[in-house]
Figure 1 (cartoon, helix red, strand yellow):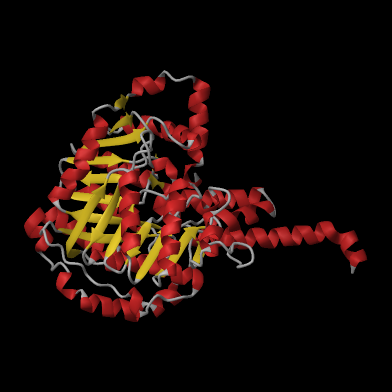
Figure 2: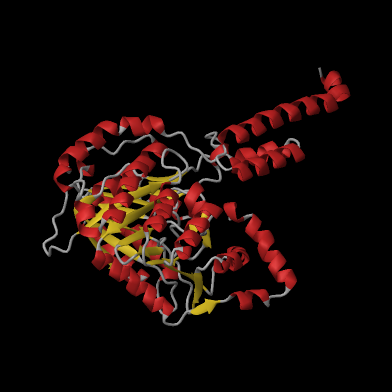
Length: 482
């Protein structure tokens, strides 16, 4: 046998390479929705024998089949919907308050999101890391039944250790605690916080962490970018902040987080519970994990919906809803994003809105923590400006906020960046909010950034050295996986 292989190994390699190429190219042709993406992957596969199919297996397959555990949770979901029925927003309410265009957007949301719009929600903005971590720490300290935490990055630093110690203390006093950290994000600091939590007795899992032994190689490029904390089934926290020291102190990175109460907590919990179930096979259905809707006393309620997105049954939910929102905008679209690298469909929707006379204004940071992404963004700016949109660079510390508001009526906040990774590859969680007061808050954050921001002009971009512009466009070509 060895003699045959030593003699005919080139023939064997050719057969294996051909089979791998045919299988991978066929998969790309059958599963890629965008023709340019399919063509690009087929080219990589055919031009790089053996290596091309392996690269496609790791980075090109972006769908997770999670139907089994979703089906297991369907009965609990039905019970939850029944319990929260009085908070569901009836058809026609959005139209009566916000007009027919927003009613059309509601109908789109009903189709692309598996979560209903609910009333009786309260969203409290947390404007700094110090404020957000203090509120989260206080909630953990006061927990009596359960704590479910899911995050992309949980650093082993000062802030990380403070919250980790609070989670360990809660576990030791009998609170049910579960912590899910993305397998990539868990490695942002050394040593990882995972071992520290495990030594404290806290059940911890790394999302999509069994990449080799668990045979999840095709999903190695997929991450949970969600930031969720749910305490006692009554209070939730979500937004853009990871758990790390960089968001605290006088020179901290800017971001915006939110404390949520009301029926929407049930949907926030269900998203994180599904992710925990997927990774560990543990369904959080015991009494400690039951949702208890906390009624707000001040009457400052808003209509809101959870928008869960990921490379599974929720593929492109955020993308579809956002492009839908752009299509119904009448006056303004305002966006704050640290990484603005969306696809051509997204940009065409913005350009069409701008062509209709809608003021489209986008704020990105002048200082970015990812130089490659910053250059790739710059490579896309000129055609965006050419289509009538305006772009501004915020000054001061790096701004990690993800905020969007349309017409001062509808807001979209959460963990999604405006790039292909968040819109196609990552697992994200956002809220769409129909509320003029909340939209006014988002617009006030936009105005704060605009007060010192510097507008990007086509003349400025055209003056850049050719080699720099070439580098930016080359990096832009890789934007779907940055």
